[in-house]
Image (cartoon, rainbow, N blue to C red; front, side, top):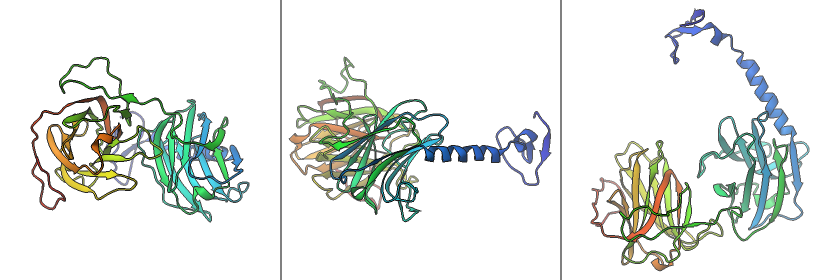
Length: 377
């Protein structure tokens, strides 16, 4: 091992380091100086502020567009929606959207009376921000939450807390030198979203790929003629190696907001009791509100592998298959003919989407004891 070595009183294990030994150059690295540089950068980011006072309160349908470019000398930036004194930095913050570039994640939180709440970090897509790459952040104020999109794609939501964004007095951007803000009302979100692609109809599931779209993760795609009875929508793609969850929604409109009705909602939750042999599948519908769930531990998907999901429209139900195994069945709670779009979110990265007749005899897994719901072939 190169370099002078010091013996350590406690055995440690490090890649490339013998047990109980630490290289001298590692011990001489000045972590305190590095931490000090980081603190200085944080202080500089806080000092770079762009604040816009609201002329009227935010309300349902209020839309905030923030643009800017992260720079390499500022390790993070934030969009804050708040009230109270902005000069002292002690005002309440209803929504704190904090982009942490070194860690590659976004923290959402609320600060009230100088105390922070519980952080939220989960998102529907991978971290979208890069140094020296311009961004556009859209914020949509809804009745119970704010919705956040980055570069035209929905990123996350944040439920109103106390204080609520509906009581905000100002919006502030910190840590971005070229920040801009534009506030107006909207009847659609995200306003910068691309035009949805159409899912092609094929005569069979095995039909060759010809002139089909290149699908992106977290897609909303249209079904202009719906899903006829006896037909199926097919999604083939690769699962994320660290599989957490994904959802499939059959909707009556191809949009994020105003919220469309979801005639069939399929949620695979690999994170729920991951030690179990099968993954949890939750089925539901949203018709102005969520209905009763159907839950069954019926999926056995392999993280990192290619998989094919099919949602078949039956005479009065939706059948869900994963790699030709029936993993769920949901009774139609609204007219199935009303489906006009599909939304895919989460850890399934699509390679191909198509609509075709269904002609496969299902395989039904044995439902483990203690699971909720039953499956019927």
